[in-house]
Image 1 (cartoon, rainbow, N blue to C red):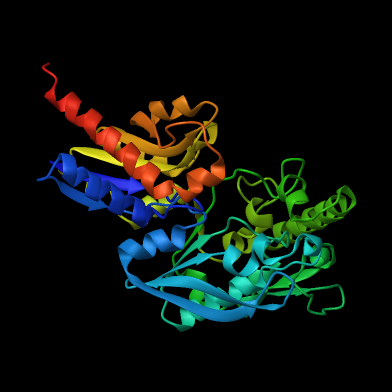
Image 2 (cartoon, one colour; image 1 turned 180 degrees about the horizontal axis):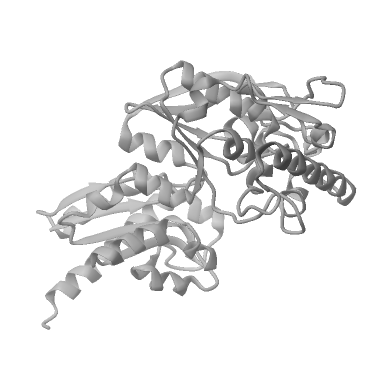
Length: 380
């Protein structure tokens, strides 16, 4: 018997690597001669660097960069042995780097993420995998583009500071000094939202408030985004204002789409592609996945839906261990997941669940393996 374990982390309590260790040890109790494989999973958000590096091998790299407000921060990314840099935007330009009273997308910048990319290329990166969740910025990618050599000029040919407030002041964009390596290298930007750059469902009005934008600030920034898109359209012929997913992370991907060969891709699809996940399904009898909470959002680019769909294609049964089940959790059953095992055996406070996560997870694994063994012993 061959079992593949492919869980996401249980945020704040259990890493995907530790979940795999607990699954493997419990499986051996019930199936002593089974072969087990573990692949830590992530969906392009928090934990992606750790999950990918655990499998692909390589090193963590750190450097000092500009934070969202320009204050120096130390940010970490991964550089794999096959020379792929895995960078989480939140490490340099993330909302958690700011105090609540500091949040104002008029003044934040993605420049530090560009500095991370520069450091990765300097250290030998030949391709980029960028995770853009959790940003504090709404600068249309001005910051990251400026760090990579693009100049945003005002009507007097002065170089603009790459912050959200200056989108409205862009008169010309000069890409002649864009770092040569970045123009043709493979770049994948992991993105799971469909929001356009502008409009009522765009970057500013949907995500601006959580980044500190008041209604007045949002109106101001929306005009800046509209103006920015018009300048780009004159330059490239492409209308980014209504492009699907261009509004993710405050328009971070727009300069990449305009001046490089970057592509947008689902986070879980990118992770599975990078890990060659489907190749690991060969000769597997069943798969166990899981995440902290399964609900109606789990079918939209989360780990369980990605793993479940891949298993369904191969005709391999999959089940999941989860921290909790929310509204419409059953919808995941249409995506290749056969059954769900919550870890909580009785009503308890979230804090208790978090403190007892390993104990509860292992107990759920034990119940699941007992059920599987019973099923195998049933007469057809």
